[in-house]
Length: 161
Image 1 (tube, rainbow, N blue to C red):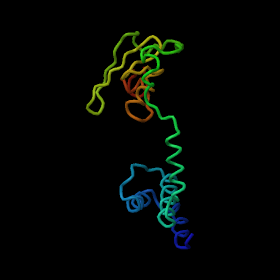
Image 2 (cartoon, rainbow, N blue to C red; image 1 turned 90 degrees about the vertical axis):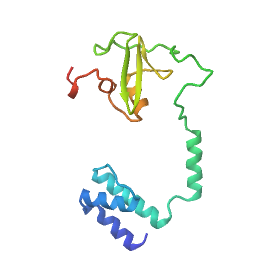
Image 3 (cartoon, rainbow, N blue to C red; image 1 turned 180 degrees about the vertical axis):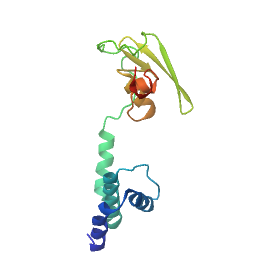
Image 4 (cartoon, rainbow, N blue to C red; image 1 turned 135 degrees about the vertical axis):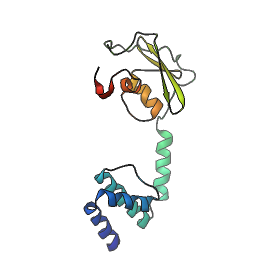
């Protein structure tokens, strides 16, 4: 590692978050929503080293692509599998008092789409799949974890019931 690069990386933890965010925008070419100092330091250190040393080798890139191909990233059931509305083994858990009765349809507008979820006796039907929890449905919709009860408006703001 070049001595100037080592000095620059060693100085990162001493910068303020605002300075790290500005450096992030300069190095990555786009702003970051993060205000987490440790994360910013790690990402900047990695990127500065990658730029100086050339990033991943071609062999490492090929291996990463192989791992992605092997990973089970299926988002829906195989077409010849069991029908989506019939779970292969019923999931049993205590009834949640916050939920309406089975058969109820929950609807919500999200990013210009109307999201409709049917409450089943043992799960939640959304977009042709059965999910174990409302949080799983909310994750399928948004792409990130959030409380399903809060997402669908079944709890008061702040978690009060």
